Length: 468
Image 1 (tube, rainbow, N blue to C red):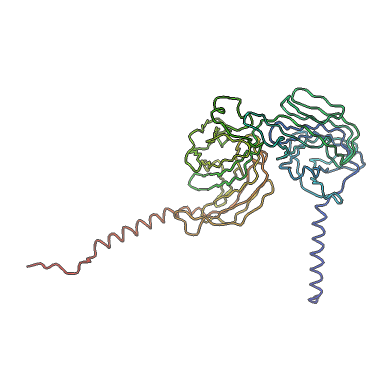
Image 2 (spheres, one colour):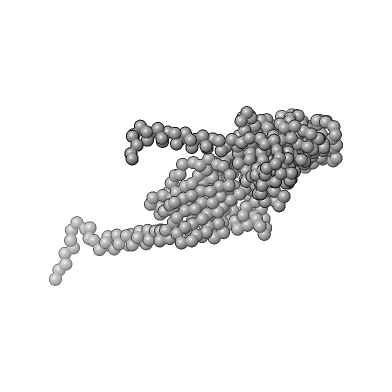
């Protein structure tokens, strides 16, 4: 039995609509009234330029049926500053997270956290959620002189922002300084050395917000990597070349008034908020390291080889104050056997998306480009977090005929937690490794052949006469 054309069209449209509805419904969750937060112990670290929040949650199932997941929420005021989120169970094993939405709460950012095992009725489970926020600390005042300390202002939520009822919670704010101009005082609270403790607070309702404001001294390096272009060139002849073009800006309080290099060199306490140097960590197998800018090699840098890394003490040509920038290129080589695996013609490249540039780094934009050997096909990219994939392109260098495939992607708002490995699988016929040697041999053979022919030809106009 054959259906008419119109009936086939209607069936196709209904099928596509059904799939669309199913897809949309899969990314929409509801807030379960059976889940309660029995206890939350939250630590907010604002001692550096980043805001690191670790929430130790005791999750309770007060319903009658098992629970397989719960929702974690970030308030509207902080969602645009969120750079990283991760969750672990009581055994420090990673839990799967997926971004989701809840009807009626479009202004809130939600994640669905999948539990390793279903939480039975009346039972509890311990979960640790870590979040990292960038650009959440604002310099206050926004401009300081060379001799002044830097003060910043943090504005957050006094309570743990959650879609569930919380029985009891406590918040510890780590400052690492005793110089605090002002802070929110909601009893019970206490101040011990460089830490302010709020709570415990009992019976906090869902989505409760109360402003937490702290104005304190923070001379930590406020360095922002505005852009990194990371180039990875893979060779099957035993080497992987890596080069990074890095642009850095001091995003702390801007320098007010003139800069005196004499005072800066004579007085060690001059410019407490400035950045004189910072440490970059490279893989332990890194070799042939170079560090240069537009003026050439920067000789003030030092390299120290350790067991598990190569430590670079990078010192810019001038100290960085608020609003000042620097630009440089860093490159090195690593052996391919540590990162490139193969079985027959199938290859797997496993490397970091970005290296450790400095402690507590924040990167506005990362552009990573991977140049694979010429002739690579069936390329598949796998990255542990979401990125924007750019169109593939070709790179031509010596002895190339068709060009080498270039895989590129962009990631924004990066912190140290994003230093993770990506994977690229591709197919490369091993016979193609003979292409470059054969091209060299063919070129030399043609060159010598032309020379032989040239010397054997007679280009003279008159033939020489010989007498018998």
